Image 1 (spheres, rainbow over the protein chains, first blue to last red):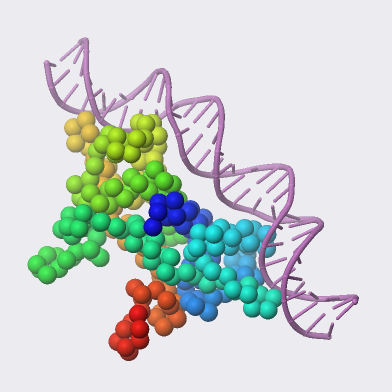
Image 2 (spheres, chains in turn green, orange, brown, purple; image 1 turned 90 degrees about the vertical axis):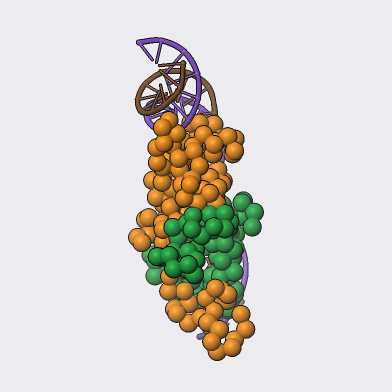
Length: 113
Length: 113
DNA sequence: TTTACATTTCCAATATTATGGAAATATTAC
DNA sequence: GTAATATTTCCATAATATTGGAAATGTAAA
């Protein structure tokens, strides 16, 4: 992943309305949620919602699909994983003992987590 | 984690210089890197660097420690993990089959990853 | 084909963030 | 002390993002 893409994805998530939208979509899974339902649940007016959905879509963090009059959005889990991988890449230069992150601690030597 | 904290952390990372700083520090592990070295490696002037380091510190993504005249910064792995957990919380409502994320697929039933 | 509904685009006002020179502060070496 | 080095604060300028009403667009049901 190039840094420009990572910055765009992070910027897309770095706003309260958009982060709320994204989390609802992550929780909803493949089924997704219609734009109008998102707006109603979060109390965001249509124009503002559309602006935020466009920002998240452009960052590839969510994907729209059309069903009749509705536009259903769902999270792009692959892209989210790529972003997380980018953030943790080469963590502690591959030496887990240099790292306090539980996730990265190799416990075969019996070290405490 | 409260949403305000998550937004602050994401906003801190959503800028090219700061994301570069953070990644260098993640790779450096506990040892960390001095402010001046970061500035030199990334070609960022002192005032600008200090502004960005303050932003990352305030979001608790990095931690400074003083060693003589130097200020050594290191990544806060625990906070990074908390952020990632917040992003992926309740993913697909706990039903991995609703989710295309390899990381979240439970393979005990022999489903393809 | 008219009507209703869902969503997006347009636009202007407002708010927030980034940049870096110069000066101030802090620490160590001489 | 005085000089040298590291980092931060101050500040003005410039750039970018957010908001939501009103109008436009797209879709489907009556």
